[in-house]
Length: 499
Ligand code: SF4
Ligand code: SF4
Image (cartoon, rainbow, N blue to C red; front, top):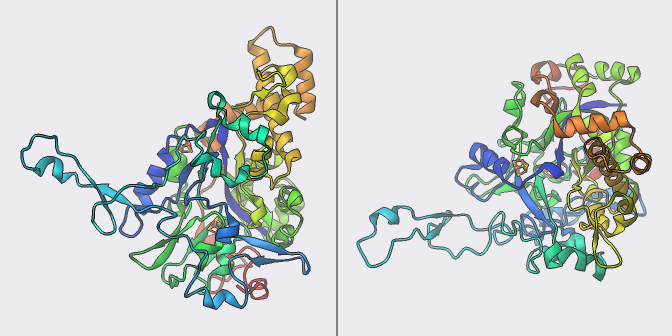
């Protein structure tokens, strides 16, 4: 067992108000530079929608992540095989182009002041940040914002592919359209396809905290990582000729401060903490069938209270401070204790180490008589007709496994009605206790979930000691000279996988 610590995040989607403050905070800090104008290390998408870059989830086109070779039961990169890896360095048809992102622009503000006197008010026309020439704006990083019912954007969301006509109709009926916001950063995956695809060995996963970084001195700008990342969270800087990505604000983490997206979040939707996981089991855990992937990923995450795990973690150089942080981790509670936070598109098999509590808000189910049911009694029965179809959410968060998604929604729903029953007298308590049973939640657990969801302090949402790099790098199992910190996907495994 090779125990590693992972700095991880949970996004509670019911609390996201789609204000994009996180994106702006990140941009102002990290990508407000020449060559990085189009990059959004943190972006927030409206779902259903096509996202950024457009249709990034379409792996038939972009070929990101891993695919399972059914014969050998081994993972292979979708983006490149042993034969075409070299050729694709020179021409890669699956690479997103500027048209899939957008041509970054600014406005000629000076014209507002310098324009000669005339009959009309002067205007500031948009100009390209790349060429300086006037541009007609046709796309942007947040182009389908709030267009949940739009036939141009939302209907093209590939996660809707398996929905029936009836389910689509429910989703797009104009008075009933529903949507959710999906904030996205790099998932700092435990089985990162970007690391495996890089021909220069420039991308590495830090052994001590699992943060995935690109060594700018080593990067040769081949862009194999851009293709290989299924979340499209690596961007090519056209000015420096290097690739860049979210660094989880590690310089802040190292001094005990939260990342900027976390700190600026208006909805307080983000939780950050430590998970302990068994790096030895990571690649195999991702070779199970799609429907079993969520459970398989859970089985890799370790119990930080188990004395045997604590002993092995210590032997692997994980400090007591980190182990203590893992025991108080809000992420561990959401992902493992309550099992209500799920990974995004786990079927890409990169083992994303950030997690999402699916949204509950547009919860009413459509009844057969065409009305919408918001009553406790009818709720569980009408889950299959809820406004954001379970099938759709399952495509996003459980590789299509509707059972897992339903169990999460039931638990969230039970907590909500349990708390409401304390305020509203005419709610049927027998019914509430039935919901609690079906939602598999006790009153004490419901109180805990409610407290961490609705009333948490910053200290409860952000549980991380300052990272002690020097100590971590001097641990017995890490050689600072050679370690790429691949978390079980490095020295011993990478050659076998063509990395
Ligand atoms: S999400 Fe991040 S760690 Fe995962 S494959 Fe993409 S760039 Fe790599
Ligand atoms: S700042 Fe928080 S609430 Fe606002 S869009 Fe970002 S994640 Fe959502």
